[in-house]
Length: 56
Image 1 (cartoon, rainbow, N blue to C red):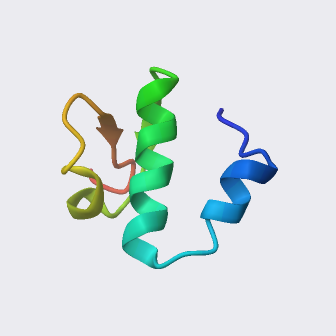
Image 2 (spheres, helix red, strand yellow):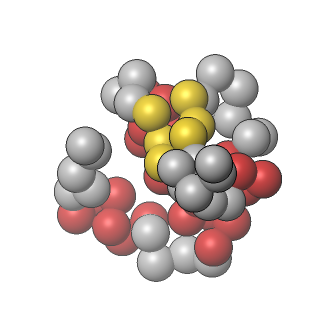
Image 3 (cartoon, rainbow, N blue to C red):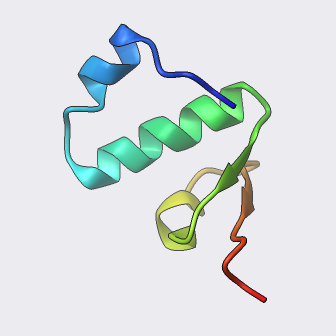
């Protein structure tokens, strides 16, 4: 799990696409796997590990 600190939260006040990039960048920087149903927003980040647990 990655916890957003106050610096990240101030950036999180922006639009949805920017929020997704911020979330993805944090996951990538922490070598974490991102769980999401919105694969399209995050596929722009090369090397990001993405899982969608809603897909059977």
